[in-house]
Length: 420
Image 1 (cartoon, rainbow, N blue to C red):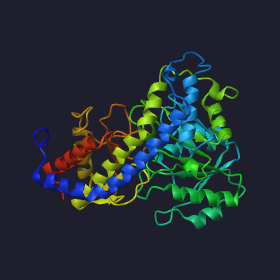
Image 2: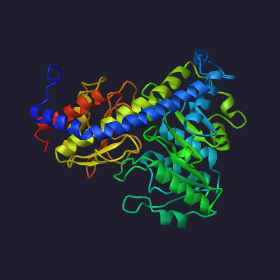
Image 3: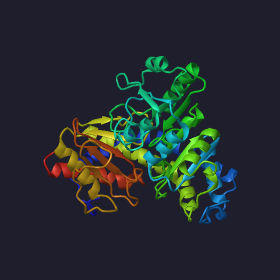
Image 4: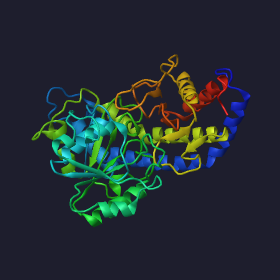
């Protein structure tokens, strides 16, 4: 290794120990990866995908066979009735927003049962950002059920759901929180509770960072609608932009009317040759997600060896690709991110510094040397500069590239006299 990178003996020995610690988890991850790869492959075969589905369309995009086949493959993979997979979703927040505005109407009530959701969705709901056309401004009501000891409060959820609730909203991943990410089994329990109290309630899941981490998806256990970004798990590191919505046919159709226009929905939208990368990204996604999960497990093992707080632990079952790392002070936080950046294939020479990032209420430092700008399935590390000074790490297109980045992050901290 030292013929390429200068890693101290202390960090090399810690890395060897971390690899030993990870071996059992890696076997479990490989089992999930194989299952999900077969699931995706079967959907491609069942829908007779051919090169003709990669042909571009222009203008209105009427009769785009590739676009229509992609939706069918996606729906089968996610156990859903229908799907809307498009390159012109600009990000995960945009995709979630389209689904929310597509389904909810004035005087409907949205209930988030995972506490306050991720920062960037606040202005969509109307928690912040007055005057920007939020759900609140359109008369959609909002309430939330706080977590109890960083876990779902099932009793409070049961009490909160009644006939007045139109949508139960679940954020699967932790966001910038230290609470555990949700398992599909936990999501299933919420679905059962919600529908027992109100059979007409819509259960929607923000599925970002969770796709293919388990063998099942929320739409297979009772969720009516899920949404996510294609520059996270589901794009496999190949999709360069886009998002997806999947679930009940009527809800997906309403979302399509919001994305384009009422009456046209999924029938229009030129693909400009993007279909190939979206198909290929989905095909690669199970393997790429497996590599990202291995990367997270390794980082947890390596830094727990040095005495840092990590969540999840290296030996915990994972429900998303996100790894939280407690670095205890701003200097270590920035040094860690700078070390990750120094090993990135793109922009390794860039030195990340804290900045005022749109959508966040404090300065953020971000390491993101990615082939696709903002891609969270490629290794990235970001953190708000606020107590308790945790970094959130996600991604890794392949395990060994992420492994050396983690070692370089430790090395950067050691070089600055910060590594414990």
